[in-house]
Length: 188
Image (cartoon, rainbow, N blue to C red; front, side, top):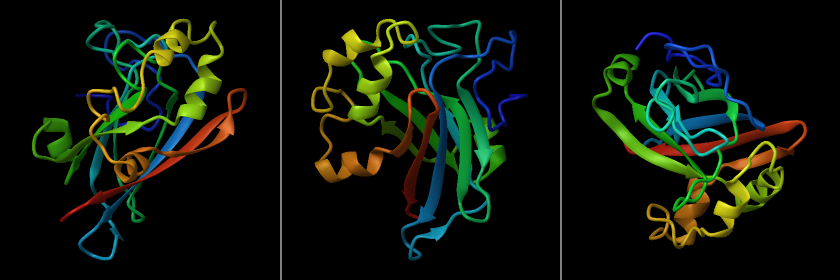
């Protein structure tokens, strides 16, 4: 898919030039090989996608858009960084981001042979701070108030340790934006 390999995933890259708006977020994922003393995994492709500030997904519930999706290849440190926005909250799901890891860019672009498909849970305190802005995130606060990690259909059966591993570490604030990091262990 032409245009999907990029670090800034806010703009659409197919039929429109719409740029998704919301609280700025730069998220860095570090891939490591858990079977080799957590050595960085260079040359792996990561496909990251998530909903917009209204809880809609490009290509699906926002079918004319292609924003908030992108692929990058890990550097020598096993890292990729995406510039995006904080996702909104929609009914029935804890705020999250999806990602898939592939052993090569060609596998990622072909959408085959993922070595890991998972999700990242957004931290509760950050969700509360961001969703307090009802102008930018119009329906997220009410939807967030109705969901918990334990009632979420994906995260609900995870242990506290698993949730901690799936929750990125955030720094920053609503006005200036956030930086987040997550360590992703892959068994190779």
